[in-house]
Image (cartoon, rainbow, N blue to C red; front, top):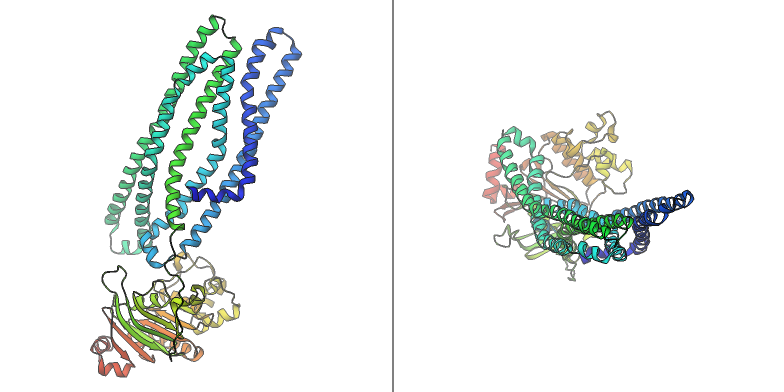
Length: 567
């Protein structure tokens, strides 16, 4: 929690002003019952209307001032809470997008989403409540006790007698609540994961008539979340009843003792009315304090989850590795890698691609094709070996500069709910003419201009209003729009017909001669014209060469060719 509180430092002046206003408003509020007592016991018996009006006006003025001060203080508290949470979210998001893929896998996407939304909201609630009630409740408690001592010390002792039970309850809730809320948040992460998977794959679920199966899976996670929420809720449910019981018991004791004191003449009627008002204020302040502790329990569990991300060490640091002499623009040297540090996903991979050449990579599903791309772009670091770009080990290249070298189209790539222009531009400084040229090369102009608003057409969520081939052509246009040094196409033409695929490959060859291209494909027709072809099987390179060479020397490639071409 200390790390989260550091975010409050820039707002110390605002908080100090807010606390001062809240302090003043609370003191004025505490004065109102005393003024009422004074009027009943001292002013009204005099039967002087002018004095009654004056003191009534003072009481009304105090009430207006108390309300005004509290409104101003609450507005400042809301601003500090809002701005603090915004900074926490910004830092959290900045850290998230810098996490390596391995770290993202460890935290899981649903957990990251939950931390950026639910957990930051809990922090927002806590910061706001601490400012609104964290200063008002203690002042109301201490100030009320001091004033009641001046009114009647004996009645004050009667009132204080119920407080130990309240404090014990608050400490118990605080101790037990924090671990429980941590467990609840983990259950919520699991619940969000299932929802995310089902929403993403809803068409597949419907196509396979698996609605009931997914309902059962959803209900299982939902029930687990509800059970844990019930457990934490049962603990928290103790608080309000105990507080109300103590408040009512304390009030009854004070009334009984007060009646005896009034009959004996030890206290005046106005004073007992004021005393009962202060009893209500004091016990309510304890109720407010208990709410602060409850909210703090939630926020503390959330703060721990947020700081886990913020304190996560950079897994992909920049290293000082000498540049080597090489003839290749891209070179893999004895590269091995495992996602789980147990079974290797790619083993002893060695090959080189010269500047301007096209490398085709083919192999069965799970053979390691996409893994090579993730390693080349340094989403993961290799376990063994090295990867070089123009003789420079990628681990020694600034991450931003490294990623700027690439234009890439992944499988199931990201499409934003924006215009086609902005989907291709993707935050880069590109002229509309460059975007149109890229669309021409990617054979996307025809379908784009066929839409009512052309390039200004807004794309639906996840590109739902585009066909598979249209999505791929738009994504290829995005990848080539900035004329990247290295172009990566990961199975990006699988939805294209053969004619469009052939024209697109021809355009890339003619207009991007200085770009080194890596094409991952399932079908040989997309890569047989590549300068070199890499054949993968179970994470190993089992063939490397031109199409003609592999037909003669690689049984795996020969089998793929036979199955696809019928030769």
